[in-house]
Image (cartoon, rainbow, N blue to C red; front, side, top):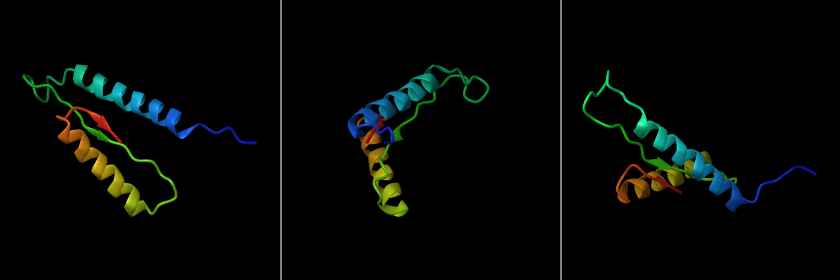
Length: 77
């Protein structure tokens, strides 16, 4: 039998990984690009559940706009 991960546990791990990437980016100095500014990122995450690729991208796009609506520099599903 194949190992499976419960979707909620997977979501938690995925969110932690995305949050780690977001925090790392914020803490990384990009002085050669923008000497006086901090670069931030908003992430929209979606799960593939057998839907079409178009629907998956649509779901990720909606999640991205939810992240931006929360105030940017966030992660959202």
